[in-house]
Length: 183
Image (cartoon, rainbow, N blue to C red):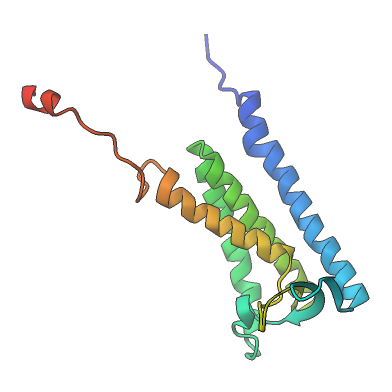
């Protein structure tokens, strides 16, 4: 009798259904918040001296990297789909190895990438609106997609430093010295 390989229900939920819902929700949240920020274009004090909603746009990457270069937008519009394909392949690797933490970090990175890519395609710049002030220092304004990217990359780093089978800082199992001597 031929055995049919099935994708069990728990694995289906963990690696397909929840990530797709999370991806759609994060992209939707990013686009909705950017819509309202762009519509209102107002500076709003949320916590005086600390947190503000302050509309701005960025034609570059993080911290306005390449914002002053005309060819920067073209470069981002070409590189982003390539990066998305690579991260989708990386997601499939995480699913195959059953790495939940890694899979969800990649979902966050994909959501952030798509959220900002939508802005680049429509407006040729990214809408930012979350602004934090620490005394006289004003942290660069960012958006929900940037949060997804940052948290996803941090999770990715944590995975490879601590959680992976070959992690850099993972405790290695101690070998039994007596067992080695008898071999």
